[in-house]
Image (tube, rainbow, N blue to C red; front, side):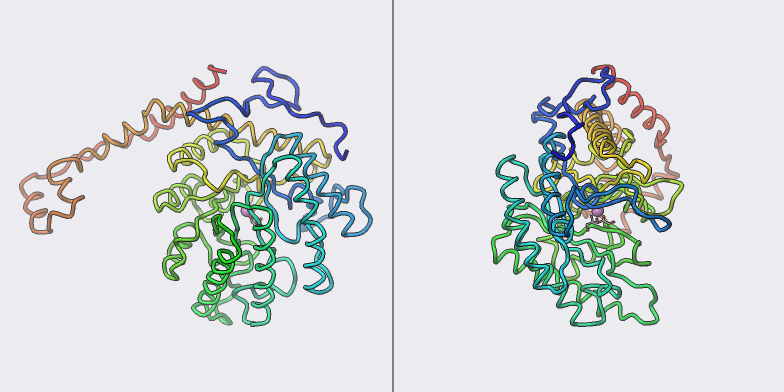
Amino acid sequence: MYFPSIPKIQFEGVKSNNPFAFRFYDKDKVVAGKPMRAHLKFAMSYWHTLCSESTDMFGAGTRCMNFGGTTPLEISQNRVAAAFELMEKLEIEYFCFHDRDIAPEGATLRESNENIDRIVPLLKQEMERTGIRLLWGTANCFNNPRYMNGAATSNDADVFAYAAAQIKKALEVTTALGGSGYVFWGGREGYETLLNTDTGRELDHMAALMRMAVDYGRKIGFAGDFYIEPKPKEPTKHQYDFDGATVLAFLRKYGLEKDFKLNIEANHATLAGHTFQHELRVARDNRAFGSIDANSGDTLLGWDTDCFPTNVYDTTLCMYEVLKAGGFKNGGLNFDAKVRRPSNTPEDIFLAYIAGMDAFAFGLLVADKLLADGCLEQFVAKRYASFDSGIGKKIESGATSLEELSAHALAAGEPHPSSGRQEYLESLINQYIVLTGQTL
Ligand code: XUL
Ligand code: CO
């Protein structure tokens, strides 16, 4: 046992004073026809949870994540046991990993692949024992210095080939473990200066690698979704997958839109100058909603802080979009989140997950109530009612022309636009948060 002081976390309700209990996440409680756990599909991020020692630019790690191991392989082996103990105790049913999270990078590509092959059977065994599943896998094509100029968008064809080899292996492992998703996050895919960069050529290369990944994945039986995870910057100054709209244009340009959906990360949305809800809406409007990396930024800091999400206003609006999108299919809520550097005990990791899971569970309850009552829907439907008949209906059906619209405007005179009632709607969300709390 790696976390002997931590009990199995149970639902105890909103009045519980036990820090190691859920107040809102009641996994089997039925909401809108299915249990909370099926709506939320929580996943553990292997990298933050098992690997990160909370180093930052100015300081060393504040906690040791070796789990008693002394060699890199032994550490990786122990991490498997620790990961499943943690997920079982938190009743988290899914996890996500990069190739290099689960096994150490070796001196050669062959050695790295062999390291992976030693860990995968352990993961498989634990997955079979617990029923915990792989939400998505990915390849870390950003950490090693070989990727300093990019991976798929490197100027060096040998680097491109190396990334392709890593992705091939990661796809094989994801498929062997029954993963329902495969993520592309292009942390180094972008540029530092346009003076040395052929952007058109780099984007062609990036699409070519994704096309090869789809072809190979389908060939070996990967039936899940491919995802692109947009992010505007960090580590690269300008990343090609800037935001949802940019990514959708890229996918359509290269004919990749049928195989790819979006993995929306809250903190990436805010870095792009959008809200989390905005990015979810763009994905939903384009039928490209796939999965979520759940976290939050810090409004005072301009980088990817990957904080655990605890703001129930944000989780409410997130779950509202998820429910409106028809819920998760292959995707889920992956906590791409890390404890703060001074939160340096194993207990803190559990408390952080409890906080995040509870915040999303509560958000789900509020969103469900909002949707069941339909007050936002009714307001929005009424707001656009002028398009339901007359000239509005003709505009929507494409049955009018500038000539007819000009005649209409001349006859109708000055329009009288209606109030958007923003402040009222914001207070309505507050009211629903309180009302939902009162039902618990
Ligand atoms: C980095 C990030 C990644 C991706 C997977 O900001 O979000 O961890 O989720 O590579
Ligand atoms: Co992420």
